[in-house]
Image (cartoon, rainbow, N blue to C red):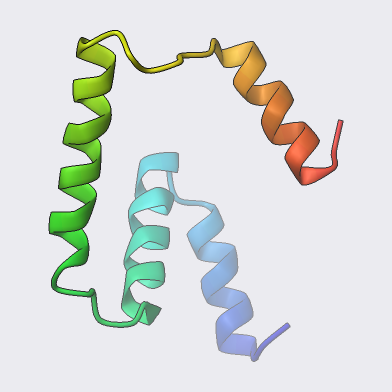
Length: 79
């Protein structure tokens, strides 16, 4: 995959400590993302606050981690 320079860069990147690899991966992914939608951060924040309000009001239906994992595996078709 890729050129000789890419192969060398990949090999060197894989030798980095985990935190450095994560930082590099984040920088690479965000550099290829489309510009952020100006309203998306506001919409996300409003949704988070709405959901937290439901939890505080005890109207949210919460599930534990095992149930969440089971549902996601079922949705993705893997077990």
